[in-house]
Length: 190
Image (cartoon, rainbow, N blue to C red):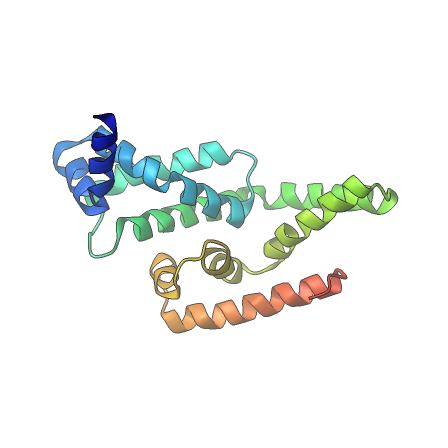
């Protein structure tokens, strides 16, 4: 019987859940929305700002969403609106952590160049992509993360970032070129 209940929950659309949240202040419907979207929100935030307090930022996204539901215009999908909130939270976090990241990056690079430990080199390569993303402008990083890493269609990326699809295409082109140049400069064969 529980299986049937879960299957029926899966059939309820986001739109209906949002309507229940707004009309009835339904926390249960919002929990379902949370379960459906929290993984993608977590990935977006991680890719955009690689935060140390990821759980807090995901919670912040859903808190803002809950508080903002009465203002949500259902002309776009709930997921698009939610990912826009995630983008805003990540942007706010990036601004507050910019100086700390720079300092930590300098320390990490110094350690990696002083030691030829394979584990340190592996960490260096794993961090290379994150470093490349941080070096891109916020506009280019956002498009690259949302489209290439999160695999959202260009149209949805345009809605999230509130820019025309043509702008998404242009930024994506420049972001990929910037990342390619960074990786080549770092000695990665592409």
